[in-house]
Amino acid sequence: MKEKTVISIVVPCYNEEQTIDLFYEELEKVRRTMTEDFEYIFVNDGSKDSTIDKLRNLATQHKERVKYISFSRNFGKEAALYAGLAKSTGDYVTVMDADLQDPPELLSTMVQEIKTTDYDCIGTRRVSREGEPPIRSFFAKQFYNVINKISDTEIVDGARDYRLMTRQMVDAVLQMTEYNRFSKGIFSWVGFNTKYLEFKNRERIAGETTWSFWSLFKYSIDGIVAFSEVPLAIASIIGLGSFIFALILSAVIIVRTLAFGNPTSGWTSLIVIILGMGGLQLFCLGILGKYLGKTYLEAKKRPIYIVKETEKNNLNKE
Image (cartoon, rainbow, N blue to C red; front, side, top):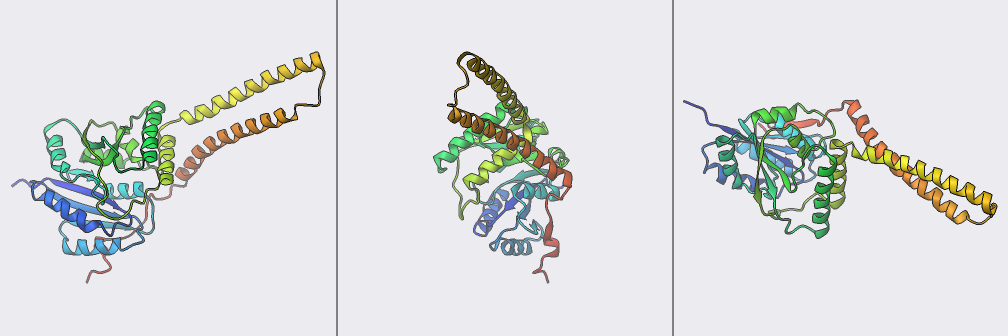
């Protein structure tokens, strides 16, 4: 008798005590309508609320289906996602947020698509951003415009981490053990055939998002640095342009001095030039420093995450 196909559901969690039970109930409704079995892998990313207690209880009640990993501290969603993929054992693997902004009912369609076509990944993308602050939506669109122009790796506008992948694709993603991770880019870089299903934006079912505008901004910068060398080229162009400008300005000053003498006026323009050139230099140094900092972190070879507890050493287990 052929064993059931198993789908691993990886769920990064950070302060999601209000959503975990609701998420599990909704996914169980979907599972009962499908022939495939589910393997839940929750990753507690150093939550400060009662998320770990919720996961312990869930794993105790559903030992055959629920697994979890708890980090020693907050390592970030990228680390949580990687840890969940590494622990997964299913024939197919999907990544979902616990807040139910990723429609669970799409999962059956995704499974059907990946089983009946040559696609290795069925992803999802939002076609609207209703409910988001306008400024966040604006900068999100600009980010996708910029990164797709300066990077060889295509990042689909509105693409979510919510996607169903074959085991082959997951193994390929796990081979990329870099410390500075940007999963949206990694999923595209590995190069497997991907189809996207569209859906309208949904609000969180409970709780509050931990992604502030500043967090998203830093995340976007990390994505650009991880998948494009264009900022380094920009720094070089600015440096060369500044040098040429300085030569031209020097020639103008020499000609003016020879023709009209050397007046004492002009210190204001001189200060402006000095400040302007200094600002350009600091800007270029900042770009170089960002890349150097990433290289420094990679060279340390620190682990992507540290596990404190799993369902196998559940502290509440008798």
